Length: 301
Length: 327
Image 1 (tube, rainbow over the protein chains, first blue to last red):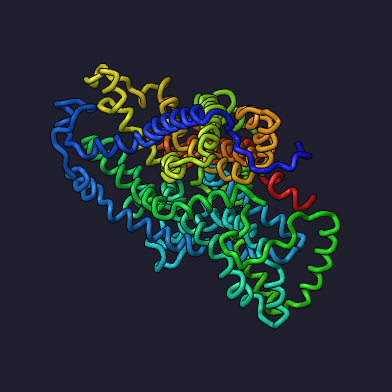
Image 2: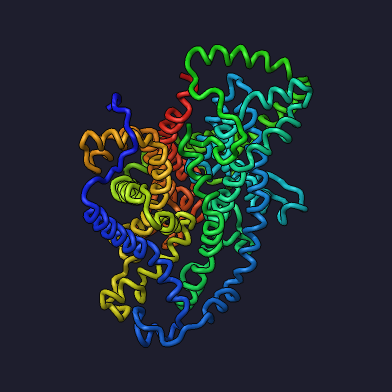
């Protein structure tokens, strides 16, 4: 194969009619698959728009007799969704910012200065990020119960059951992934830029702040989008490390809504749809950033 | 692949591949680089690395080691831990012989892995291959298949409940209108793991698709052209040419798939707290030592089993992605 100096050749050769026919089949397959894929979400929205009484009377699969947003309003107030959405922001915004700050510093040092320890440290951070959280939860739970925290940051004077504690574990866990991505990204930025700055007498901090960070902005934007979604979606940490149900972020609060919390399925559907919506919207608005963040981590070099 | 291609003014990477010679020159260069740093710079650097490292060790690796230690004790967390609490391998013996939920959990985790590796992942790859071409609407299709990936598995559980409940879509379509005749997809201990796996796969397929699409884009197009000139058909091109050169991506996808199946927790917990057909190792750990009982030692023994299994994909990942730099 190697000796063919190939000009661009159309892969699917053959009569034009056959190719077009294949395309039609392909689109039909893809459209049906796409419909199947969206169906659970569409179904949830459909159920949410119908009153419970109609489902009992007409069945679940039926032309809707009444359509309204009543279930959404009920779910919004009964489940006090605004409170839990707000809790999510209290956790996610600082967690994302601190994670990116810490991992960009780490990434910078790992990408620019080769110590013997660098690779080992990078491995340690990355491996920590890949570990199932349940492996460390028993001792971590005890540590959180034992660590004091000023009353200003915690109602009970402990790291346990405080926003600080949840933010902390997110930062520590997510730093692995972000450092891995950022140090790979920074390796592609010219060494001469940082070296020239250092030779000219700029401090390490200035080089990081004024040279590296601006050039890393695309990767930081992608990671911010991704990390916000990861943290929004966290169920486990706040479930275990946050005792007070009212203080939990929205995804962990889903655990409070289990079983008999909602008396009717249609209000439950409305609640599910509203909780799913924010990350879907983030994805629709920032899809490029989103996919970029994911693939930056997986396809290296 | 991850060069800042959108920023045209950034110079290309200087060292693409570190050959033996390059490593030598890099070493001598790094020596000269240190002399540029002032004492203050070195302190700043130590802080930049030291603080996060301390936190990572204190909150991830110390607990990991503590889990191993605790697994040899019968500590319940009420009285201080003393020598009296050491019970040797007793927790492991109980776990492997008499504890009724261990083996079901292992089987469910294996099932999760098998379904993810042999069904969800190939579907994701298949969709990626279908979409990796110049075609109207390919972006739209990609977005559709990716939507479930942005949802947490907890909310995926809630969404699929609307499909599975007695008044849900499936029972309605199957004609089971009264709740007495309805199939209890989530309550039946033989069915619920499959119901959950369908929902979890729904999310995993999109994840694999996106990773694979990124990989496919990095395959040199002349390879395919050459194969096609040699008379290979689409299937042969994929299996004989594209798939083999995608080896690095294949490994990342498999590692992520294995890790995701070991981490499975949210969806089973949200449906029935991992009981009655939905036992998973991750849930047994928390139920035994935190949420329902305080058998810290016993729960830690389960954590050690999960740790040992997780090390396989984690080490594979580290060796594949970082080994190149040391070699």
